Structure formats: structure tokens, C-alpha cells
Length: 358
Picture 1 (spheres, rainbow, N blue to C red):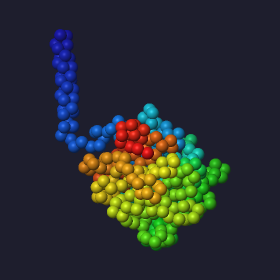
Picture 2: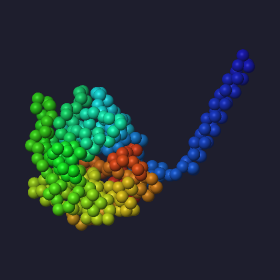
Picture 3: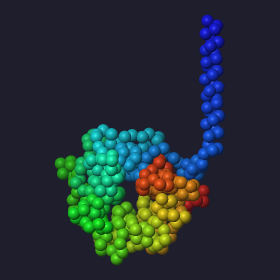
Picture 4: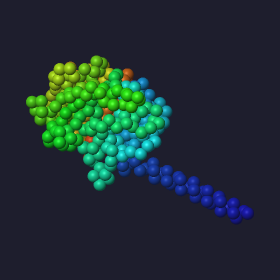
């Protein structure tokens, strides 16, 4: 019996020593690791998830919708508790590229009807379609029979959306290099959503320069203007189009840098921008900047992730109260929109720290 007890003591001692050695090795490991931005976050930035991309705030600011990965499932995280819940795993699907809250709480999805693992990117570039998922999560989404190039835009006040199409989506309808932005209301007939009052916002052929279009945001507070990306024009510029008159304004006017609008502030005075002003290396080396939408081209840097070799910050979106920004970390070489976790940026804390002003 004593012999068995001695053997058990030796076994436990071995386990303790093993754990101690493992802990020692783990503690020393970071010394040989290159530090990334997530290793030295300021007090006003908190990591929300360790995976995921393309965050979208709920209207009450309590939850964030995000993609697991490109062509993956959609999840929702409760900001206060960090509890993550699945949104799209109650039915079979081929994966999604976008997920956005609608004004009534339903969810607008973009994703292909079929997925080809041998040629995956066509599910984003030429085959993505719009769908609406009921907020009850009791049934599959309804297909809107409308293709969408990259990201759609969603009104935060009305059941209205905007989206872009191009030659890849409709090769018989649009010539190569042409893109269009469209607007429509979402109506429900016997509980089934459909698009109504469809209207062309902008055709790239009507512009005095060549570029690719992508809808971004309805500009608050009256939502009478749409911000959009002008890809390939002076690298890429932040622009706006008046939905009533069709007048186009270039808000960034920075020919030597990449400027892509993302999340917009609820007062409509500023938009966040993916920008390479800090290094002029292109869209793989971006960080997040703030651009004033008054024609002054006034900008201010918000994140510094690209100061760490191999990293970038992207896809920011502002909460409806304007207090916080959700964004994602990515690495140089990742395709646009691919993220490696969601972060929260507190503007009030940053202001108190002297790092941000409005």
C-alpha cells in the first residue's frame, strides 16, 4: 500500500514539475516572438474576439454582427458579456461575404447560392446575391434575386438598401469595367420580403473619369447622400453622390494615397477611411483614419496597427451613439476584408488620453 502511495506521490510531483516547466517555457516564448499590435493595446482599445471579420453594430449598440470568415457562418456577440451566438447555422448554406442589420432588426446577407471550393473567389466576385434573414432565426433567408458586387449599404432609419453591380455580376448587361449603384426599398408581402421602387443611383460611365464603384453608407442624419468608393481613380478616393440630384463630390482629393470610406459617424460630419497615408504603400498597408465630409479634406489618424510590420487595421464601423468603433485586425497579404479578430475602440477614452479629438 505504501509502495502504491509513493508511486502516486511521484506521479503527482512529476505532473507539477511538468506544468511548472511548461509554464516557464510559455512565459519565455513571447521574448522570441515579434510583437504585434494586439500585444500592446492602449486602454481605449479592447479585443472583442480572436476570430472574425466585417463587424456591424446593432442599433442599440449592445451587440455586434460579424462573419466567422469569408464564405463562413454569421455570428452575433453581446458586447457586455462577450457571449457569442450563431446566426446562420440553423440551415444549410454556401457561406456569406456580408451580414448587416436592417432597420427592423432583420439581417441583410450577401452570399452565393452555390460554392465551388476549387474556385472559391467567384462566390464573392461574381456570384454573391442578396438575401434577408428574419430576426427570429426560425427559417432560412429569403432570396432577393439580385446580385451584389462587394458590400451593400443599409439605411439605419428606413427599410432601404443600396448595392453595386458590375460586369462580373451581369456580363450580358454591363460591359467590362462598368459598375452601377442601385437603390431600393424593402417591402413585406404576406411576411415575405422583396425589393420595391428600384432606382439607379450612379453609372460609372457617367463620371468624367474611370473607376470602379462600391456603395458604402447612407450619410446621416437625413440619408440624402451615399458615400462610395471610387476604386482605381487616383489610387482610390472617398466620394459621395446626392441621391436626389446625382451630384458627385470627391471628399478625399488625395491622388497619391489609397482612401476607401468605411463606417460613418451618426452626425454625418465624418467618415472613417481605410488609408495608407502613413506609408504610401497601398491597400495592403492600411490603417484607419477619420475624414471630415465638408470639403476641407481634413484627416486624422485613428489606429496605428500598420506601424507593426505585417499588420493592418480595417473595416471600421461606428456605433449609432458615436461613442465606439468596431474594427478588425488583419495581416499584410490577407485579401481585402479578411479579418483576424474584432476590436472595440472607445472614442471617449481615446479623447481623455489625448489620442483623439472631434
